[in-house]
Length: 301
Image 1: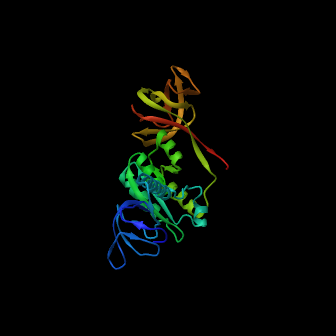
Image 2: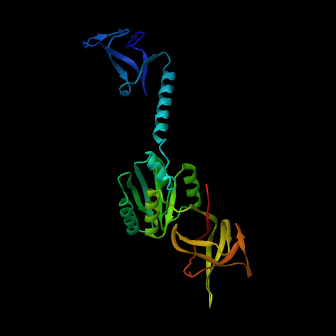
Image 3: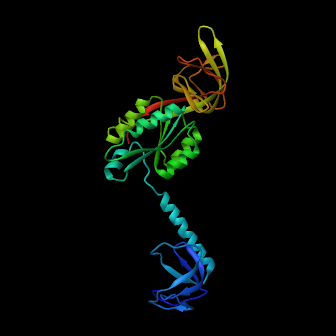
């Protein structure tokens, strides 16, 4: 005890633990009913064991004590999730500052063999300054669970031949999670290695124009396969780069070669309208595929 007098039956709070004193023993193990300043006591009645160094208070209002304990628990939880956000663009400076000693990565791929190959190659990039650690690898689309894990562990998400949908991209932006997608392993490894060395190429970013769902396919002699599409978001632009997504897995990376609205050529088709799409050097589109139209632009901060 430091000040005041403690009595059996008092409501007490220590750290995040609350309780009512059921019994007290002095330093000789004798049962006592009260304890004054400078008296060492053993207290029985707390619901959980407090941390060493927690301040110990007797209060009059049990409701207030429990509210205070809950507030302290919330503060502890918030402090645990306030970890350094890691992005590939800022990685080298964070390593130099000492704020990053371990680079956590989450790898998602279209097949298990690719996931294992990417995982193994990335972990070989560890050096004396930073350890590269793949905390999770799996097969399939990037999901909300992947983002939750990335946020909690300050990880970068690597997608190999898989793409995040619009909702996942938005969620990642809100959480501050960096998602990187690749189709060729050596490009993934080269970019990661460059980031570790502070030698990333000038920054570029993808700008997504929109998405269209393939609802029918038509084979035209001498031309190839035309996808009868419905634009589900944004717009589809003639000449834009395009990915074909099948169950969120990238099956082709190509370009929109021809775009028609009914029988007329179109420069672009907006959300909510149907269109015919022919892709450059790719004729294997199927009903249910999603065409993602995009461009890549360089930028300066």
